[in-house]
Length: 114
Image (cartoon, rainbow, N blue to C red):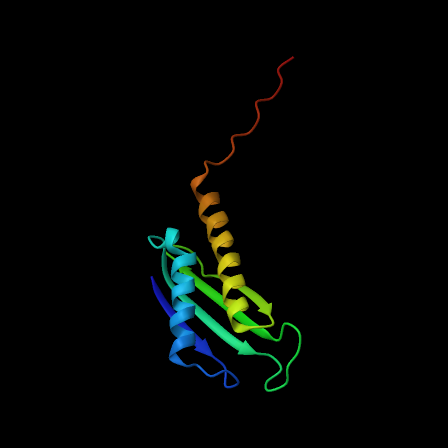
């Protein structure tokens, strides 16, 4: 699974943040490593240099083999909470998407012949 971290111009994209975010995404999505080929993480500060509640944003897009990309967004007061929250949301989305595909199609109920 390839992970790419992107930041806007209001966030310092230093190596420690990128390394931590990469590790968080890898561990949070590890059970899907056979299905997920790439995850793009976009971190942004919606208010720029001003502070505000939940002004940090993380958008994650996962490329799942043989499927359309899946994306989630999470806002929080810190970058670390946005990455953690988005990873949890993406994990649930991938799980439900792959789980739906693995279930057999429901057969129609037989008509009552009374």
